[in-house]
Length: 105
Image (cartoon, rainbow, N blue to C red):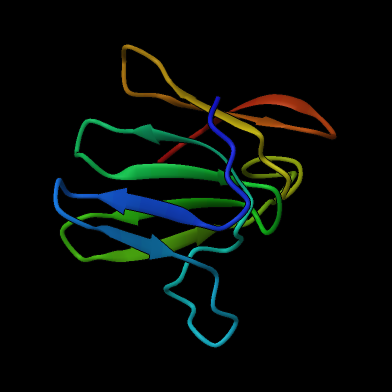
C-alpha cells in the first residue's frame, strides 16, 4: 500500500504532474492523503483518500469524480482506506466504521 500526504502524482516518463485537492474545483481529487490507487478495466483509477470518500480519475477526460458515503446504498463512511477490483470487475470498498461493501460502478 502506497501512502502519500501531498496528493496524487503522475509520472509520464518525462515529468511529474501533481493532482491536489482544490476546494473551489469539484473536479479535483477530494483529499491529499492517498491510501492507494487501483486501476479498472477501462484504465480509470480508483483513489482511496482519508477524507470525503472515494475518487475515480477518468483518464480520457482528465477529471476526478467523487463518490460519497451513503450507508443505505453504497458504503458506510467517507474514510476509505482500501479498494479492490476482483477478477469479475466488481469493486469492493473497505471502510473504517463498517467493513467491506460491494460497490456497483
